[in-house]
View 1 (tube, rainbow, N blue to C red):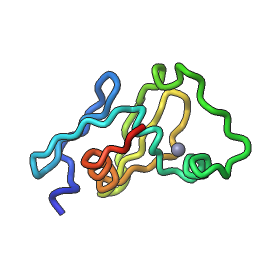
View 2 (view 1 turned 180 degrees about the vertical axis):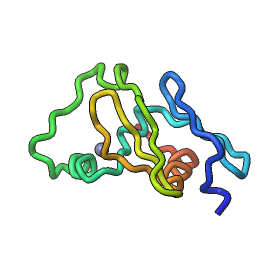
View 3 (view 1 turned 135 degrees about the horizontal axis):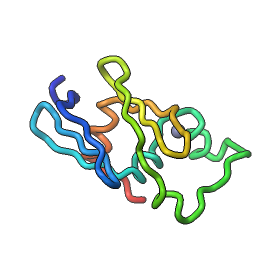
View 4 (view 1 turned 135 degrees about the vertical axis):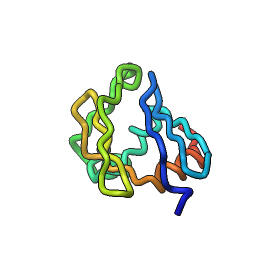
Length: 105
Ligand SMILES: [Zn+2]
């Protein structure tokens, strides 16, 4: 579906900018992306199932940077963060839905 196909994905200072094939434009903050990280570890943390999780310090998100974006097949990207986290695979559909229905955080 055209709607879920990006034509361009770029990193800016504090957000990921996505241009979509249907001409929609998204800007997703790194904070939002990281808080919504779909990897198993982050999911467990989110639902309180990870007893070893250490809550991020106050300036965690201010220092958070995206180092790289790796394409995963035709449907997703892997985000590489500057704190070493790299297990989050974000499907294009997930990113598009996140930009259209941003949760309150
Ligand atoms: Zn994660």
